[in-house]
Image 1 (cartoon, rainbow, N blue to C red):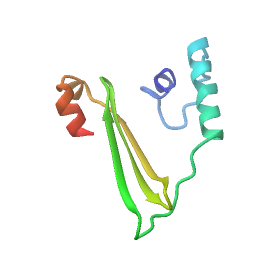
Image 2 (image 1 turned 30 degrees about the horizontal axis):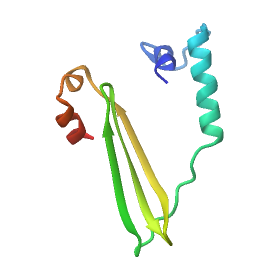
Image 3 (image 1 turned 180 degrees about the vertical axis):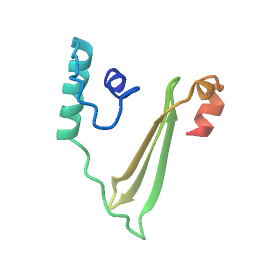
Image 4 (image 1 turned 90 degrees about the horizontal axis):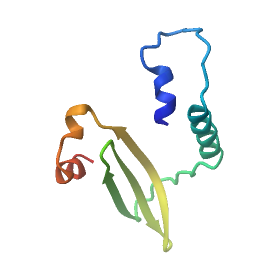
Length: 100
């Protein structure tokens, strides 16, 4: 997704400037379309289900997933991801995981 973010950086609302596609951006766009076409369906929370929260952090972003166990099957309830600020990128691995 990062190659696509550059098109949004410093853009204005209703900007009509044509996008100048390069191979990296086009590949990222096609990958994103494929991911949307095969997106995971979210389950409805069940009061009796056990909840599991998975969190992770990398050098540039954090993310998480909330799942439930229902009838011996893990069902996704929601996902979260966020890019890190320049200051947050300087956090230790432990602190980035804690932030996630």
